[in-house]
Image (cartoon, rainbow, N blue to C red; front, side):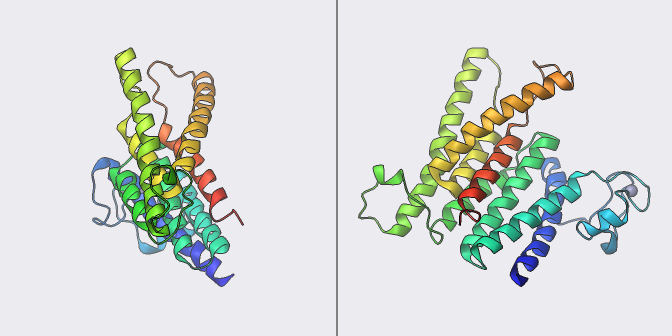
Length: 265
Ligand SMILES: [Zn+2]
């Protein structure tokens, strides 16, 4: 119980850092320097106005100095990250598997909201996530359903686990890339950003091939349905509206990952 609360608080802090990343990475700004500032009045934010979740509530969602509205994304990202960390530790204890799912949760939240706001999926999260997922597979065993089709079962469990992560990273993203390339060739326009392909590689590195494929299929269905409804309701131009596909991959990947990981038992 105590661990879960500590994980929640730690998740709130990481969520706060993710908010910095979501604002700064797509703008090619450093996530370390300068200290937090209000984007509206550019005044630095005091530490007591920068406490995850609590400061947003106490300030009524406005900058203390200029009164500009703080985007609702800030408390949502903090709370969501906090909950994901708490769920990971509650389900798996203080362990390496819990750390893996905390990292995965943070990555997906960061990517989903970067794409929603900026239509950018930073390489730090996508490629960095893919590498981290493959490395973690050496210590946190993955279920290797497909990799045994390619590797003899005489390999050790560790190598099969890493193999599944590599296969997950390459195969599903490769398929998505091929579909995107075919679409571009047929329609003579870009249908899909390379960021989505790299993001799916990160999903596969953490969840394996089956998880990455399921994320691709359900994320595409969800994105098409919600995208179509949104274009109708908000009266957007369907030809020019850019769907934040990474946002749908992110939320689908979160749901499937946590259902198969920390929430599975
Ligand atoms: Zn301000």
